[in-house]
Length: 540
Image (cartoon, rainbow, N blue to C red; front, side):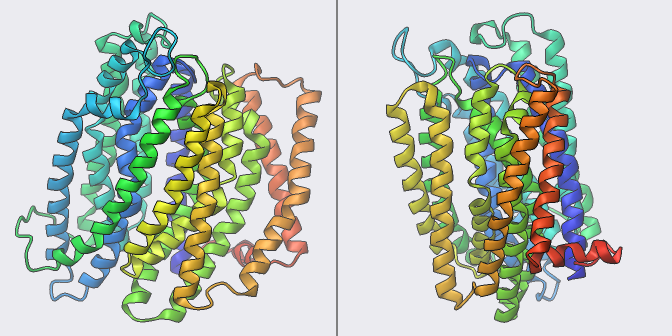
């Protein structure tokens, strides 16, 4: 367990720094572009296009393919060197072509993801906003290649036990992006919320710096390959090292890409209906999702990335007892943190939203609180998907993904029928509901496949987590109300005021949550706190 503790701590430390810088970058962006309006929504759409592909690739195809196969390739006479070089070369070629085609198709992609208004009072993007979004997309879509390279190299380094660079590299990306936005702030003379006020220099500074940051994030990882024992060279001889088996595994995961992209297109089109009326839409959803991803990235991704290599090794060695133990342990630890994080985001959502902007902060706060409902099931899905990947099964997750997408799309269509002022809220709620469906179905299927995966201990721990929320949420809400009343905190208060208020409420909730679980004698809590009591942060 010491190795898991060290790996998770290293991953978490890099993720924390990167996410803090990412949060600062998002705040700077929100205060530069605003939360609503054609400028904010056009950039949100354009910069989300490569992110959509990256999120699926990093969490699906590459994870499903690389880690299990790289671990198996260790048994080859050359220690897997040929396999890694060939797979990296193939990935670079494929994703280079994908990025090129995506960039050339920028106008088509914008029209696919945005609902265009049909008249002066129509909902959606008008012609000027569409042109601005396409201009942003020309600059942003090359990120697809760099995100893929980052994912390829990161998964290879992780599989070789070198976890740090993957989580620290995004810090460089965020530094470049922040510099670009600060530069934009000195250049812009018109109204950022009006699409027609953007000129070519301002477009290139904002979108170009975003792409340069992603390029820096990916290319820096090449410098760590030798430390992982890999002398990388391009190798186009793709035959003879099992790449055909790899492609079979990836085929079903690409099916998941299609399903997820369909849901993404539906979401983006529905969200874009709010742009013309100035209601919360694409930009608000994007910033809300960023806040949602903070606890998930710091805790869930860090833990699961470290566990995934062990799970793949357990499957290779037919160690089913070890696999079940790792699944239960990872879910329990993620549950401990995500239940608390969900409650924390729900209680502090108004303060967090006001940090980004006082304009439309109320809408962002509601979106954050609705997204927070999905934190726990989102973490469960993240774990269980990788269990299927470790088992070499990407077919089952594909069918389960269809169920999730159907539930979400039904909710999105219902949302589109209603008033544009409620669009962002309806989409956030639809995502949370569909994520719960996703987690429940995946858990039931995996429990049937592996036997009695979840026993009384896990159910008891989850019950204690939920029970501990009762005093935690109450104390958090009372603390927030006390701060608001005594210090006259309002939506227009300063950024620092809202940050301090959220931090104070967070500390109170953490103390209440941990204290309640200790009183309930929760085994997971005691296990997590054991290193602190021993004064040894290296053991878990």
